Length: 162
Image 1 (cartoon, rainbow, N blue to C red):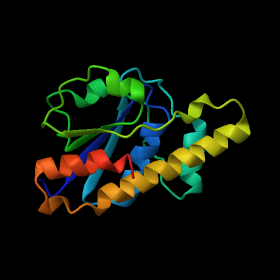
Image 2: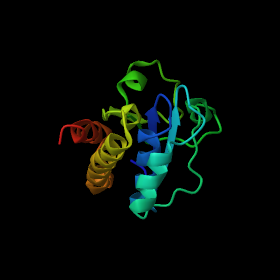
Image 3: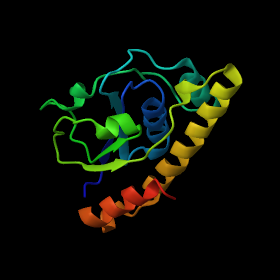
């Protein structure tokens, strides 16, 4: 595989989970990884608790925005090495054809925006952050340069269950 990897995280609304994953990978993965996020039906805004959780963790939030996955399906879009769905709805949708024939995985993560009150919202965002941080650290630990595409696919599929 390449020496630099573009990773696209997808959720339906691109407002919480995929945004958090993008920010964590941007923070932890440079210079080997470039992170992006998008949604099939973007909400147009980033959830305020996502921004709060990231800032609390010391992770930059500048430039994060809710955007359509169509941005990444265009011919002039960055070629993705990986496309990772985080919500079950996005995983079941018919995705665009991604330039670059990326490896695909599904890392199911519960939507923290479904919380009923502020305390539950904070708890769920903290949980989502911890799950995504652990999975992204696992992705970063893979010896990608030493693995073929099939081996990498098996590894990224297993990350959800570790």
